[in-house]
Length: 325
Image (cartoon, rainbow, N blue to C red; front, side, top):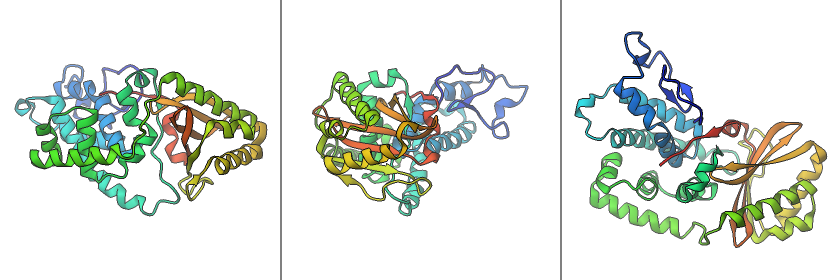
């Protein structure tokens, strides 16, 4: 979603006008600025997008889920809704679960490693440490290992702090079942998430060192900043050249990156940006975006490099996306 100003003349979904063929507020007799359904949706739009994105790892699919949520929301009798925020979260969760189950089948045939769609995020996302951690590439990859229901329960409870009764309604389970699912999901995530808390200063230092190594192509500088067991994943989606398997080990990763950079030479430029709430890099060739690099940093060293080259996943690094809890 765009971080720009909301046009009061039209409800927005992720910064774009809602399709007028499906939006009753485009009727000249209706004033969207005073329509309570439209206002509630606009007020919670960033939250709804964030819920959908954390469940799906795809901004494009999250936007589609928001459109589906809007279509259902405008048909609701607001007189029967006690808590509009909770009701909207329930709709978006259910729609995201439907899509997540379908995506699971599609990802089985995905060419090479699948990585989440990177977002260019504003500094305020990085300032909310819990939100930034929850949308990081490393965490989204951990969430991919959960079942759809586990992922929904974990996101709603651990990130958005919803009550168990609200979550139970959203996922169609009993409260005791949701508590068990939450406990199981927490244990699963805890076993796989980074154990060290990295300060912003440590992260910036590691990013700058990695950026210098990339810009100079110096193999030793690259080796110095990579952890011995660093993992490199790249996602070309079968459209652009990318690794079909993870590469593990500082030596292999450094040599691979150095060889790739040497191939393009001075045609490559690197720009530090905020990616999913953390420092990352946008790489351009001849001024055109070629890919986005996100990193996992522990103990002052890079332990994970996530290189997204699939052009279908790069539209949200052209502009900042607003996220909220």
